Length: 349
Image 1 (cartoon, one colour):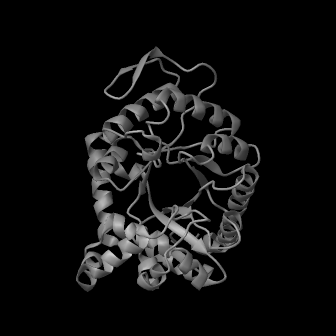
Image 2 (image 1 turned 90 degrees about the horizontal axis):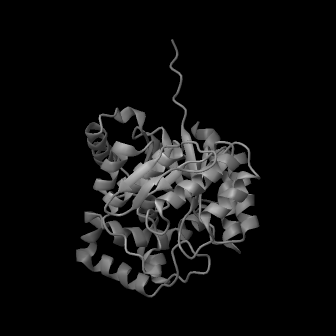
Image 3 (image 1 turned 135 degrees about the horizontal axis):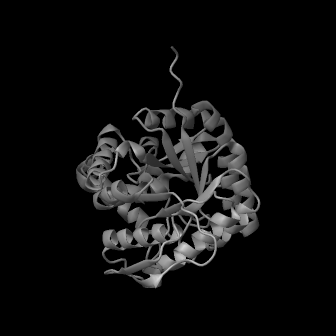
């Protein structure tokens, strides 16, 4: 008997730093490339991801759509339930809800206190409301007083993305999809996240095998592999400082890390902004090996092999945050990554 390979689920995320028309065009290319799910980044001060998903839903047919990731602070969970109900109806059942602590809240002066409690209460309320139930919830972070949704409602899959052990355990209790946010993923890290997920699933009496687990990878592809890797050096440097792997903290007696931190301090803009300014020292400090630890970057053939290494850790799903080679515009760079994606997905399926 021949064993049939387990299908791999591929998810992409687009950060909407461009016109709405360009975002819709990229979503159509993502669908044509063969992605199963498409997330739109939910970041304050960027174009609203929910408006964009409403537009995308009317110009795509198959791909599933969701925020990557929304948060329980900038919108009341009852408001999120209403948004998801409308989009689920508009997309004919193609929505998912990606939720976590979120991004960009500090710039708007929004505190994200008690994240596990806030997420637990928000997800509990949203899922009940989308089942058409009357909800009474007087929690520590939200209040809903004997209310139910008006109009058509339908459940949506819940996706939780995180680097936090506590939030990953919560995903084991409540999520349909768990996103491993470590960015640099090896066998030890994958096992650690699966352990947290299993602990949460056991608490809720769930079978952890029923939860889809997807590593978060940043994908940057170009026919010019060196350009793709250079475009990811600022991103890799950011995650070196954020995650602080022990071997890199100790590199050159700590002097290397101090130099990276200083170079980032001389840089400006977010690491995915097209108009960001990267300090030239980053090109020297961050070599290709470090880029490979934090991103899937290079030619399509190189990216196929790098993604295979991650899938070999036992994953049957992968969530790819799309990054742009430094071309004339963010749209042009993301389009280049997406236009190579069909080759990558075909090779990995």
